[in-house]
Image (tube, rainbow, N blue to C red; front, side, top):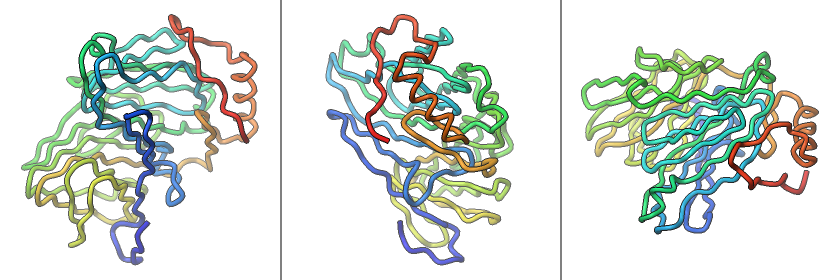
Length: 297
């Protein structure tokens, strides 16, 4: 984290931690030491960009979640999502997968078998949204919104797709359960983006290209968390690709352990015990492999 003055529009800079998963790089952005959450967003992973050789791909075995919604969004490649409410859904670039775990869900994520026949790309983001307390134990559900259903905004050299919530005067069709926003933004060389102060907590994750804010340049692979209650004006002299996200602060602190999020530590302990002892009560049709509970506190 860089040293920033109290008057700086960028309150915090988070540099993600990179992990190599056998030739496939994942960058963990949230949670971090510098910032645990931005609005209800409690987890952000960048997957790739990477190219898999023929026969290789993503194979995330069946695993559980509680108390959160997973938000999967791809720029390149295809992932097949399967879950314990019976969903089997290919995710392609520009589509949105929104899986609200609530009281408990199990899912798997794997590369498209057809794509594995040749070399193929993988590049995208997965975020988790912590659910409000009144929805933490709701029945699990899954929603898929294809790229054509997500509103887009074009203004000069700015192009934005509204993935969830509301931004730039447009609203995504996804039922988000909390006040938030999440958008995929592309800025042409020399383009400008103004982000209003409608939400208290806001951030931008820079994927490609650099941007300038108040004369300071920021390079890609950075989460910029903005100071509240002020408009943020960003320019991209050479062009840039980024996502913006945020919302209102949560209704109390959240605990996160492995794939579990809750306002209650006791609820997480229960989920851990249930998965370890095969008491979770749900499974993914067609999946015979699962990820065991990690060892440790």
